[in-house]
Image (cartoon, rainbow, N blue to C red; front, top):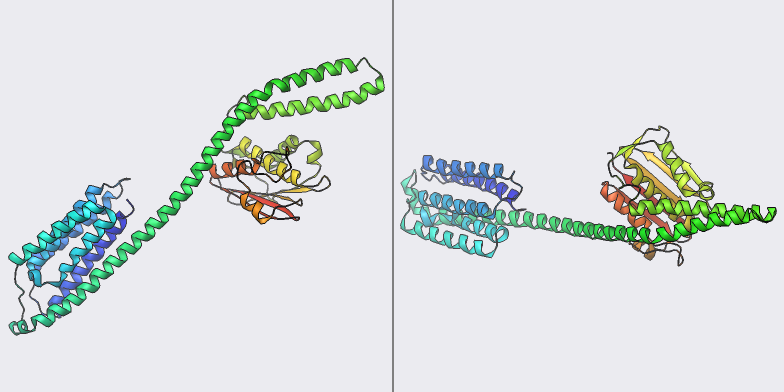
Length: 411
């Protein structure tokens, strides 16, 4: 319960205010106070507040416990009023503090209950009380001015306590609401990711058969053209090799989608940066690798990250950069090692408008031409970064290219 820490602090502040009020009454207004009973009540309040603070270690404080503490406060305040003037004591306004706390923290029913208990307890002070006594009996003549000045001090104290408590609780509730909004957004992204993974597994299953057929047909074509004219056979063989190579590449991708290559582990492991770059070039293919500029940190050391998930994420970001670039444009990949890992992918392609940049990262949103992609690369990169406690950010300008930055914390 978000209000509980503030309740503990408020009770400590109230305890200090009661001690200050008692000291002022005795030393400045010369009221004769029963020190021992009052000290016992104050010590009881301090002990119960210390117990409440200790019980905050419980992950889910009970509402009944908070309500019991507020009722105890009402009883302690009633005992204080009984010892020091009864209804003439201006500290009776402090009853409103407990009622306000109950209304904010516990709801309508508890607020009515605390109000009823407070009214009954205050009524008892009219019947049972210890009259005010002064060290100098002649000061009794100044009872009314003393009462009015005491009411002013009590009003300042009560209004300060209520304003402080309600204000801080409102801030805490607003912060909690923001956190809940962020959690709901993250949960929605996780749901979309789960749906995409299911869709990918289904697509992998459906595409496995036609790819197998294409591979078989390519093998048969190779066998047939091998008996044809040598010149034509050599030209056809080149295209057959390309077909078979691309089929094998698609099959590897589908293995990852369908899970036949094993579940992608999210357990961080040591990844050599040089080895990572070599594997990225292999997956991109020779033509794209020739257009890739890589910048590694001066001090090369292994990074801790889920190896396969990191490779898939970087391939997706690089593929997006190449798709957005002209055939003669290059793409830059920069790795920076700090407490974690920063990867920057920069291209000089078409870039994005402000409206497109605002929607980038949404699943199935793409700036590519029809058939050029599904718009999932940046979304999956964000999902990976969130799982690792990192971030993906981007800056883009139409006609000037795009920079995508992946930041991962240390393992």
